[in-house]
Length: 121
Image (cartoon, rainbow, N blue to C red; front, side, top):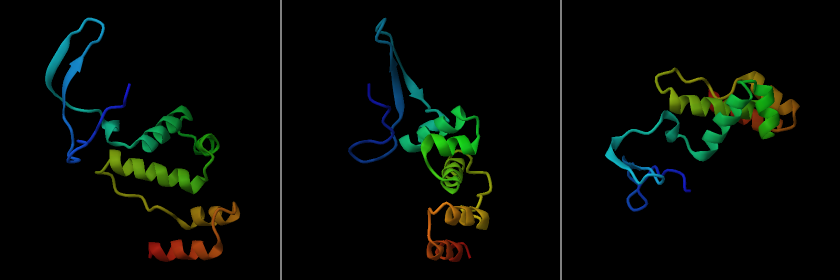
C-alpha cells in the first residue's frame, strides 16, 4: 500500500482527505478529514522522530541508531521542532560546543568550523 499523498501530482497543491474506505466490509465514509500533525513531515523526518521516540529521547542512542553525529541529531531535532512547533522560538542550529565536538570527531575541518561560526554571526 502506498503512503498517503500530501500534494497533487498535477499542480503540487495540498490534497484534502475526503473519503475513507474499509476493504473488509466495503463501507465508505465521505467528508473532509484533517491529517495528523506528523503528516507534514517528510519520510526522513518521520523516520527520525520514530527513532528518537524509540530511543526515549536519548541523543547518544539516536546517534548510534542512525550512525550520525551529535550535532546532526540536534539539527534534525531542531528541524522537526520548527515544523511541529512553529510557535516555539527557534533554537540556533549550532553552538560553539557542537562545532568543537564535530572537529574532535573528525566530522568537519577547522576551516569548515570557522565558516559555520561566521554564518551564525
